[in-house]
Image (cartoon, rainbow, N blue to C red; front, side, top):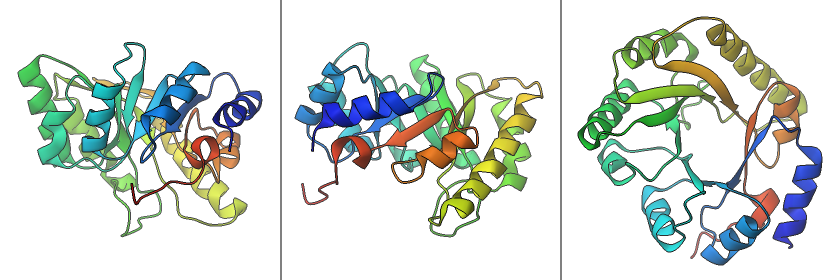
Length: 221
């Protein structure tokens, strides 16, 4: 498994407008260093504790850390000032906690609204019909800026993947055509190692790739 070779292959495939997030969860600092040396600056972590530890162990000023996993409200205080983008805004209660914590620190949180496009009980995210309520609350904020949408789609064949990616792009485009306070549809974060090609074909401009860069994860570490 060659991290640099994997990154080069991705760079050769990905269009210039697509942002690559290297999902480094469970991976050692040595792997992150290798990816960094080959030009990667965006790293995605699922857990607040692991992210915080890696920020301290690898304090490069030009790295952008992404929190891509579910964010518990009682963990928000630990990521203020450490995270470039929170991909997983999945409830109004979480929004209010982010607003409160970042307001206390005088900082601004950039976030993506996580949409549970298939309404899977096993996944986090708001449903499409709850978007307007979330938007209303975001417009009241002073310290939270929404930069787009994120989704994790159900596993399936290429046609199933494309169906859900297409639905997400339609939602993204509808919101992009409207004007909101604190909201700008800049990023559509969808697509991972197994389905990023289909995601890009349907309009994703941010993909989250872990195994395709670092190999299989070791959850025993």
